[in-house]
Amino acid sequence: MKKYFLFVLFILLSFGVIKGQNLYPPLITDSSQYRFEKKDPFWKHTIAPAVLVGLSLASWEASNDVRTIRNRYTPDFRSTLDNYTQYAPAATVFALKAAGVKGRNKLGRSVVNWGGGMLVMGGLVNGLKYTTKVMRPDGSSKNSFPSGHTATAFMNATFMHKEYGHINPLYSVLGYSMATYTGVSRSLNNRHWLSDILAGAGIGILSTELSYLIIDSFYKNKGDFFTPFDIREQMETPSFLSVRIGQAFYLDDFKSFGKLGLEGALEGAYYFNQKWGIGGEIGFMHIPFEREAIDLFEWDELPPNISNQQLDVQSLGFTSMLVGGYYTKTLSSKFLLQGKVLTGIGTGVGGNIDFVADREENGVVSEIDVPFLEYSVGTSWVVGGGVSLTGMVAPTLGLSLFADYKYANPKAKYTISKYYEEIDDKQLDDDRLPISSLTFGLKLVSFF
Image (cartoon, rainbow, N blue to C red; front, side, top):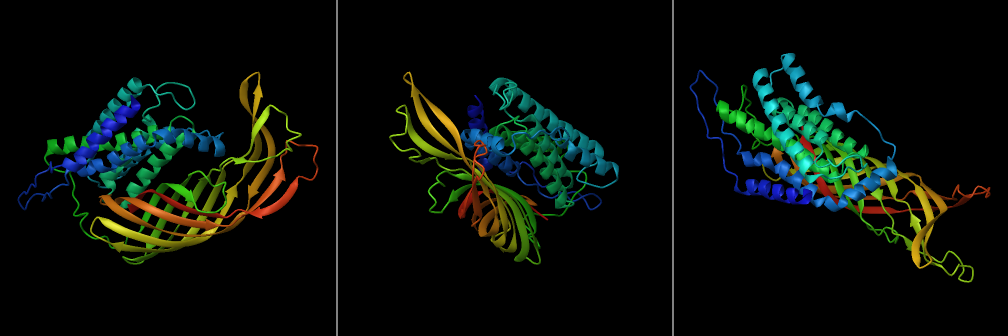
């Protein structure tokens, strides 16, 4: 049911993008009144929700992998802050209006827009929760899909973007940052699957956009106050903040790097002119290892019911902080090509290396898992670079396809597992663990 809904919603949103038409005819008033500009067609506002719903559908099979990563690195994470950050953007909007900061609309109309978004979002979220009946990751209830906290957070973030994003894009950055934290926190709290969070974000954005479409159509204009900003105008400097996630491919000869990894990062740059800037990123890579077949015991010592001996290496986490130069080429008013060369430091999060084998008893085969070694990864220099193609989906918001390369060569330290308390000297030889990765993925970019 959940997968069927995602597929249908993605097709409908995509159809709206392809077949969209201008719903807002130009309206000119006399010189004593405001001059109304032609609005963007509504289909443009469905691009981001369509992408998020599509990603939710595509991530269906990856949800368990994301939960495994969460259990690997932050199994004890508990936070109630997301109960409040979901409402923080809307609270900020009303605080700004109470302080006299002029946005897109007056207070009364803003309340109507916000209330309409809440009604649309609440109806969609609750209707789906109790028809799809998806079990939560923690097994507490069957109302996981979609994430209501995330939908509320992105609905409120889009509300903040609509009201104040044209005044200063940092308002949009603040709103979507709080919404992103809310979504990530729902995963870290083990309350939602990845597909729940992505669908919730799409529903939240779409709910606010629908509310503004209806209210603006009723008022026959696009707001109480106006701005001359036009996305077709070339931005003076493409300074930005972004969040990205991608699939990593490991290029080393080290045969244990057999599986695809996951990389995420926060990135930003300040530009001195239209082409050149400096910036950096803070990123994290999850590096899984393939099990490696071994002959740990001599055959004459191996019990006859033991077979398929392997080493199971726990996944490696690698955090990096990089700085360097950025270059941007403006392809058109809506597309940018960016490149970067970075360097910095990185450090790893080690894990366990266990001996696993199949054991047969009474015709039943089961897997045994015996602690063997532990490994830790030191700090090393990291070099890298990348390119990205960004398409603007809003005046200050872009969506990028990126390809990044990184190389590091940290030292790995191996010790005998603490399980073997009778061994005094557990230290083994150190070795290098080269990490050479190529990552492809998506990046959400806010320009300022």
